[in-house]
Length: 384
Image 1 (spheres, rainbow, N blue to C red):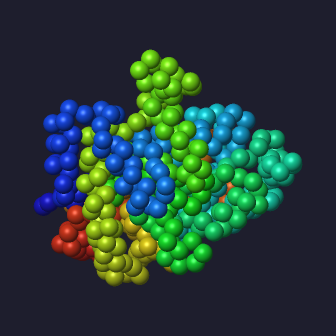
Image 2 (image 1 turned 30 degrees about the horizontal axis):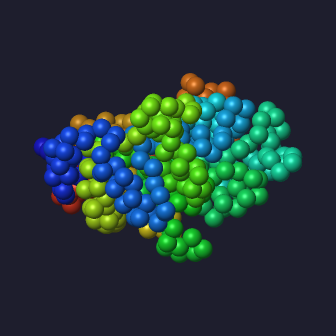
């Protein structure tokens, strides 16, 4: 019986060729032409003037918080249902997250965010302050969970009304774009003040590890690049004008990324096809629901979520049974407000997040997942 992984890379393009060229050239670290070329190609793909390559989505989010001017004494609205790497960078800069629950897209619920801001905050001198803590609420970090676009028109309105910076964590959503409405044609990550992508090994396209920052503030992008390369003012004389970071992507990783980007639209088409297959085979059957994606959006459909509607299905028992049959699945993340570092932080409107945490099983969704393997997953699930 063949093992069916959850989400693995697809190296069916020019990866070996481009990486070998980088190795033969002996430019394998953060120098070399491929890094700049990858930045240019990503910027062109997402429709931004520039992009800044970094060594992970997490470092990209750290840079985003830094260049946005978020710091000690500030608070940031953040989703409770997401991977913890979306939130830790808030702490890196000395600020504190306030956790907000999700809507049915699994992304932060703008209605819950608005309720918190209107009921628990006040505006003073054009800035938003938490009435309980006295801290300035300075930003919102919106995560496009599993490639599902958050409700950005609503968050843009909130950001404008309460004078908040809007950070898009698009680490799971490269290629997701609006197809309808006032934001039609705009890509996830390019709509707020600053956005971040990830190219981790399990993402829809990968550089092994890596990320990219884009911003609607050219000076923010320029400063992110400066900080990511150890804040060098003089490359020859080793003069540094600030505390910088070793966050630059390597030339070898960029070479791999260029090959992956060439295939991204094909990867997205396959993801959409296989999500449609799971939906046809499982949605509304045997106590299951396949979670859909937002209307008016072409999503990359990075992850597929099986929602266990029938209480006879128990999440962890189902994951174990699938594993016994060499099918890898996983639950959605534990809520961040329940994690040890964040137990003291405020959290609001968590009912849906708690429900989805308890009842979601993420199904195999690799970009090279075959119809035969997906059918095997379906057949087993329909017997449980």
